[in-house]
Image (tube, rainbow, N blue to C red; front, side, top):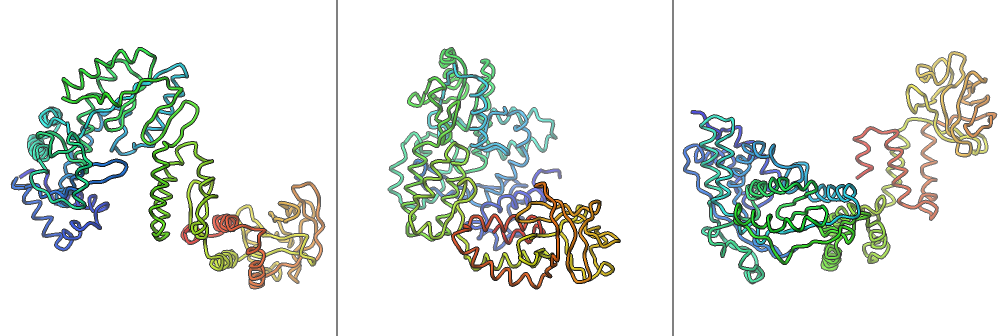
Amino acid sequence: METIFTKEKIFKAYTTCRETKKNTANALKFEINREKNLFKLLRELQDRSYMISRHICFIVTEPKPREIFAADFRDRIVHHLLFNEICQLFEKDFIENSFANRVGKGTHKGVEKLKEYLKQIGNNSNYLKLDIKSFFCSINKDILFKIVSEKIIKADKLDYWKKEILWLCEKIIYHDPTQNYIFKGDKKLKDLIPKEKSLFYSGGKGLPIGNLTSQFFANVYLDQLDKFIYFLGFKYYVRYVDDFIVLGNRKIIYELPMIKKFIKERLDLEISNKKISFQSTKVGIDFLGYYVKPSHTLVRRKIISRFKNKLNGSKNSGIRKILPMINSYFGHFSHSDSYNFKKHFCKSMPSKLKEVLIPGVEYNYLKKRQDMSKLFILLSVILLSVSTFSIVNASGQELSGYIYSENAGWISLNCSNTNSCDAVDYKVVNNDGVASGYGYSQNSGWINFNPNYGGVNIGFDNELSGWAYSEKGDWLKIESVKVVPTNELQNEVVSAKNVISSDNLSEYNIMDLLSNLCSQFLISSECDIINN
């Protein structure tokens, strides 16, 4: 019998679901008898005896109080299976500027598109910002199922596929989680939820916040609105879930009654009158945690306050908990013009944080302060892994660095004579024992070991002599420049400890030095050690 409910598809759905929910209690319980549970679920889907399990209800308070109904792990597998089957069928017809819960979209992409539009439309423009009142709790299930059904029936698919998809869509859409749930958390938090934002008072309407299918069906539902906005001729339009913005001239406000009418008659929804905003784009647009202006973008003050409150509430937490939280907010800040704020925060951090954290590049993130002794070890590993030689003269001032071959990169000059020198194969020395390629002098920049101008001779006593040309424009005469073998570098590494630990070189510079050396000399797997 042909069916969409196959072992391959349910296992794929299980694998995807497990990626984000593998550490939850329900997921671990399912894992104990994974094969048995998967085949049981598969049989239930095939014979249509599948029943949706009990939901877990709880209240989240950040960024504002919300009522969440979380599906059981086995039901989440079914959600992913359905999503995998129908996503592309609907996705191909979604507009480009719908940014919620879609691959390659998201809040930051939505803000970037709004910035782009503000630049295109010019300064003498206005915006109309609208929000749908209690959106998830107000979704009309009959209208939603009709939209979904029409799309499924018209799809270029076999009849068995359409029948099974429609059966599963209907079961999920019309399921009421308030009829079978357990509540977790402080029950007093329920009082924070207004009745119009609770499924317990929705009169059979609404989808539970927290499920993959709810997020997907929300986009399907409001795709009707997206198409209508385009029908009205608005070119500059951006939507994220139920928050949407129209840019244009002052005439856009005249279309508000038409938009309200469409939303009410076609989708059985209402615009929140309290959240209607119509202003000049010059004053800025409050959107997705940012305040977007034509010239720049700022982070909302509420986000800053929330960040500070979380930080104050985490004083007694370990650095492993605090650092991800800080970097999460810094990731949000990085999409705005917030350099000065991040810099000020890093410089005014509590002393306990300063002891263990340092800023990254451009203050875009924080990282743990490394143990200096470990840095010395890493530096030693890098220098000794290079397997090359330092070049110094008798006074230690004329030349220092490494020989560079144009066709072989940085290589060793471990030569006691020209006949046994491995570098001959790389043309660092020619058959006459003359070095060619490049070396670096700390006081003269890059030096060309050019055989056409006499070159640099490698003698049998491991010494260089001759002439080399510096890019700074002067010829350097090399006399008795000793080639120091790798084992002698160990002393240099040890002596470097005092220099590195002094005030002359900050830890930030040390890490840059390590990263640069690593990228030049080591393979990527070894570089991961340094970067971590």
